[in-house]
Length: 147
Image 1 (spheres, rainbow, N blue to C red):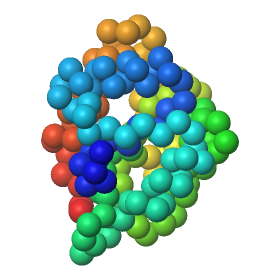
Image 2 (image 1 turned 45 degrees about the horizontal axis):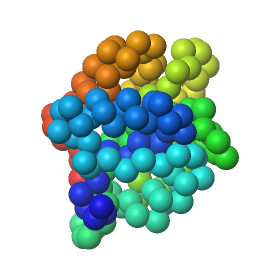
Image 3 (image 1 turned 30 degrees about the horizontal axis):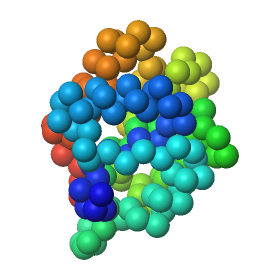
């Protein structure tokens, strides 16, 4: 996959959730432009080396959204979000927390660190697929990022 074709970065370590997310996005013709990263360290390594959303940057990866789980191996999602927001190259990339955590402290911390949205993963497959498809359609097709 060429760097400039990636529209969604999915940071998720749970294989069934990755599979359901990709399936839901493919149903809306959004699945072929998704990059899956499976832990926080891999996510930060890729994002910090390949993403630059500052105005005037040519030939760089500008994803339309990062779907970020909180409970990740190596580096947790809150730390990934903190580092994304603290770097001028990545601070404007929309980040949606897509997690199983309905903990108030996780929600508050996510918004305090600059998350654009916080979505608790629905339990049932149909509800999960619908939620992911709607997220994908909104962030990829409707939202207009500043870059």
